[in-house]
Image (cartoon, rainbow, N blue to C red; front, side, top):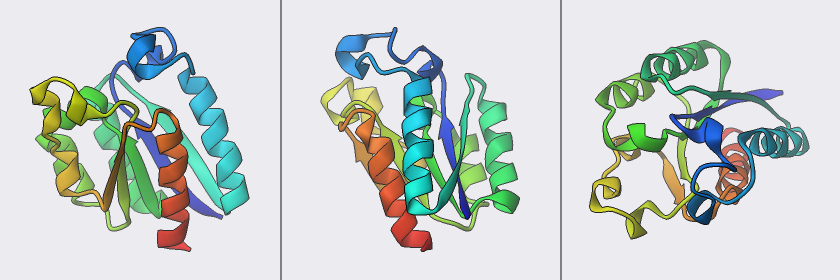
Length: 144
């Protein structure tokens, strides 16, 4: 099976608890379960990871260069600040899909800019946690 890394940035470990009016009540563990279940249906092995530390995410991107065919990434707040994550993604040869649970374009203006988008094949924003599943479906088409 094809391995896909699903990477999550800071504060997503609090999904379901933090600002449920924006992010909903589903937990990150629920998202992981749903991604892995869909992955099996699509013939994908999902390696799911979350960190509040930029360097840990960069390390996983470096690891993905050897172990994964695609990356789905919700960089969270690092979206708007991390040239280092962009640089790491630029070393990865497979497709990258950027995911945001909320519609970042309807929020504060600083959230409208994404460094990650400069590398991503596509961006999915505003569809809640379903964005992860949409991303995996697209990945399956891109690497299949």
